[in-house]
Image 1 (cartoon, rainbow, N blue to C red):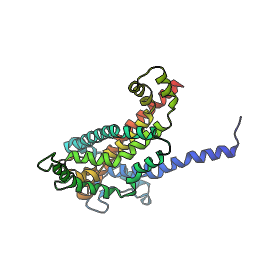
Image 2 (cartoon, one colour; image 1 turned 135 degrees about the horizontal axis):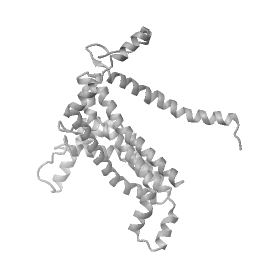
Image 3 (tube, rainbow, N blue to C red; image 1 turned 90 degrees about the vertical axis):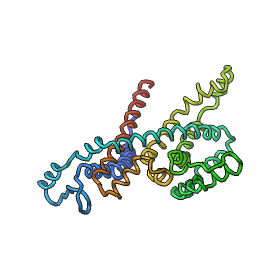
Image 4 (spheres, rainbow, N blue to C red; image 1 turned 45 degrees about the vertical axis):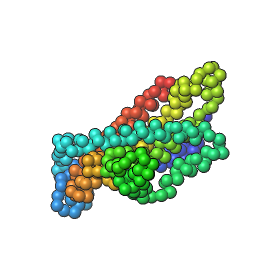
Length: 304
């Protein structure tokens, strides 16, 4: 059965919209950052050379291309500060993602198993923190976690501790801030996967004598894996490049690539080096995602 040319054009336009979005808001900015990362630092405005001036003619453009340098990337891999920043960011993001999964999965599971009349209210409660500014919510944790804050005052009042704990300006405070801020991004994909799961499969497993715990690991968890993967990506990717939380809640020893990137851009005004940091960070995040998607596609083709 053939389709009409009008329908084909309509489908093409629908597919074209997300590609145009990626082209305008992802690929074009990335190419600009990549170009700056291959330039040299200069005391000027903007603080780098060369700048591509298409109005200067093709010869000037080619000459500018020849002046591009990989010196910034060589410096990144030779300086232990940047390597430690990348590794520290990956470690903090990985631990935070695991904590979010351990906390978010029971919440999403409970939401998906509660009466249907309650579910919209519970979803609204999950997204309720988004009604408040992200910056204000992070600032609130300063008052909670400080030595004279609400948490220490509460623990002292109930006799759990005698002296205030030092939580603020540590990696623990960063983990708390990331887990609190990104919890909805983990809960919602998990809830979507668990909520649409066919409950007759659980009933069948129970009828066959499968214990509840085994039913969870054999039936429920495998069927919720798409939500697990989506939630982990949604929290891991922004957590790696997080700047606000480590800057406000972390201390001087908290090393994350987002803080390093901000320092290079705004404190040192070394735009080429900062752009190099951003390009490497993007590659670290994008390449594993592309590999994973290719693996998933090949697996689906084999199953199909």
